[in-house]
Image (cartoon, rainbow, N blue to C red; front, side, top):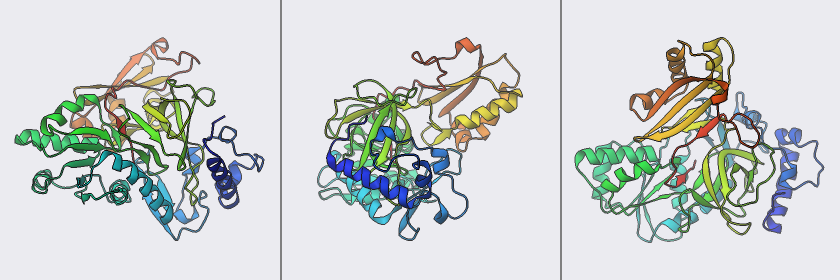
Length: 431
């Protein structure tokens, strides 16, 4: 049983469940079999993300909504199919989420900081807007320079120097692109004292380049959040690599065993991270798998610390190269089409020379379809071809015997995703 930390959280969860069942067609159906007084998370089903985010036509008809769509922000997430999925929250919910996140970001800033917001905007993407709104809630005076992610590198470099910007906030791939440009130009920006990254992991092999062009900068996660679930983890000064602290009163986090679904309370034992938002009422999110693995760093208590540990074997998407996704369901379909039948397969991820390396291991006799299959996999995943061309992503096909595939040592089940990328720097995920 997930130990809710205080009676206020329990009361909030009880009220939210009643609200969701009463006003959302989705929850009226999926929670119909439960007693009205059930309010323990472990008694509730995990959210079926495929059916939950199924929208046909007008978002106002989405079965998850609990009220008319007339006072809301509508965003689109990165998505697992290239088309993405919509995320909808009310304006008061948005303001509350931004306020909590901004207060947490403030623990990484100092009065008078000049922050360059380099996150991307447009096309219903929340990232830049989210950080812009959150910075307004930092509890002391700072200045924001909203360059966004599409600024020309020469203009951006000149602006950072001209305005004496001392904090950079952006996705790792864009920060590294900027760093590479500065390196080629023989430029350094010693005024930058902090780099805050989010949206993906900043891997340890990227740190030397950043330290070369930003010699006085410390790199930290800006926090852990998503456009779908809101704020998930705060990046505090006492957090080590990969670590974040829970947002008590905002989000209930569970770590569960992937095989049994049972809650994990012991420290150091990894499992699937599951989130329940206590503030989302327009589109309630109850026991939603994040797709990430995590482990508790501390016993139960206030603002409990956890560490992120890669993507779950049950994940519907795997981020590669910083911004693109590989989709297990799409890969499985491509393999079946190439071979004329299905076959056991596994995705192995590693990191070398600043690039993500992906090997799709297929338990089948060696075939001359490998080249065609690789091309099809690349073509079916938006953004992947550009990463391969830029040598930021390497994809290979490997044939093997069934006995060569890695299994879960406890359950004997196939590990669909084996992520061995070095996360020596803090992961930072948001919006």
